[in-house]
Amino acid sequence: MSDATAFFIRRFRGALDNVGEPGRYFRPRPYRNAVVRFRGCSIEDFEQRRDILVNEAGLNAFLFRADMIPGCDLLSDSGTTTMTMEQWAAMFLGDEAYGSNEGFFELREQFAETFGAGWCDEGASAGGSSDSMFLFHQGRAAENAFFSVLARELSRAGAGRGGALSGGLLPELLERIGPRLGGADGSPGGPVFIIPSNSHFDTTQGNIEDKGMIPLNLPCKRHLENDETYPFRGNMDIEELENLLEHERDRVPVVYLTVTNNTGGGQPVSIDNMRRIRQVTRRYNVPFFLDACRFAENAWFIQRHEEEFAGTGIPEIVREMFRYVDGFHISLKKDGLANMGGALVIRRDGDLFRRFPGFREGITDRQIMTEGHPTYGGLAGRDLMAIAEGLRTVVRRDYLDARIGQVARFGAGLDRCGIPVVKPVGGHAVYIDIDRFFDGAAADVGDFRGIAFTALLLIAGHRVCELGTYAFGSFDGEREIPPDPRINYVRAAVPRLTYEDRDLSAVVEAVRVLADHRDRIPGVKVEYGRQLSLRHFKSRFSFAG
Image (cartoon, rainbow, N blue to C red; front, side):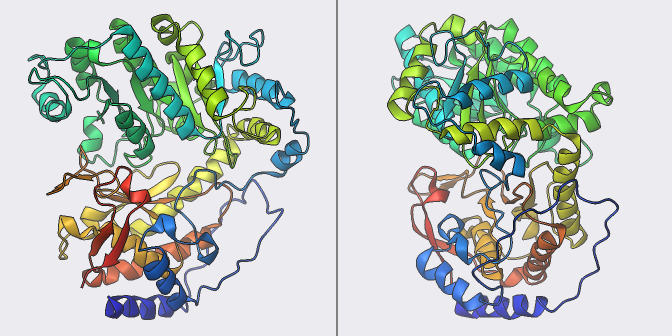
């Protein structure tokens, strides 16, 4: 281990003296820096970072101290946004009243403006029985509340059935669902309900499994075929969805769609795909929900690549997207441009409230027990003001051009160095395909080279995240079970309005060092946490050898 890390430290240190090609800027950024903060550590502190990584963090990027990252922290784009001056100014106007604070009403009004009239009715009582906007401190709390109350309502209604799966299911669906479904062979116990999606993210998957349901990923065929020419690789497979609902409709309480598709490489979803999902779900009377964390970035891709909307403004495309769904949950730490906040919004006249009349009160009770009064939902009043302002900014075309353009340039830089990235590059992150990265070099599945990759890049001074066979896989006590369908990515998620192109170019150069010597990257051993749920947040590793 010491030989491998010492080798890469020498290479990383040598790369600092490289003089790259000067940046070529065809147009200025649509914003300027108003505040800067100097780092408390130096890029030269390679040995210190190695010691922290090995002895404190156990090679886990989530456990590495942020104040010791001198380069780009690309662990997540969630809550890491640099807020605008307008947002900071709005925070001074925050009303910290315990109940029915001013920010609640401003945010509800902005939700209606952003997502479409009818989502948040101004005539509804604040946090009362007719409201449809439920605030939480972040998105995963909102999705936890949603699936917790859904599981309770399903139990109360006596919904679902056990027994064998229908023989009419497509063979690939039978193969993927059968081993995970309780009672599939007529025996009692185990999961009964299935939540299909284009691809569930890690915490969504964890919340669904925690409530005794099965998260089922149905990414479109062109994504599975790695079609780099297709602009909407985030789409859901309509044929599989329709087959599932035709034969197992009673097992599917809701259909979920993630925009953009984070697990699938940050890939967007088309309006056409949303319309077709709505047609199928309406035919079988199943609610249709969005995980809407990156809705504005998704709308930008629709405007750029879906001919019908080429001349339509981003705000109008957003409202069109939300016409087709019965509700959505959102982490406002992404396209809310805020550092904290989440929401669950359910259409008042939609299928979910009709099917489960007690759902609204169940969510409100959940808010009160875990978050506080429904009109602040675990947030300070100033946070609500910052979110409202962020929702006004995020649909600006100049902001989205700069934001998504920067990510695209970052991806292109890696691609020019021969790094296998998922293409087309998505809106919020660049995904490195670890299986392809190590093609031709010795790498066993159980070596978890994606973890080793992230660990060595931390020594270089940059933090990224493994979202592959370790994050989405599991261990049954004897063998590793890979994610279904198999993915093995390292994600570099770019915080909004935070870094400049030259910062991301430094990441490219560090990754180039790893690529040039990929055969020297060691595997890792799992020292703790291999059998845990959501194990990538908690595990500890050591370099093998």
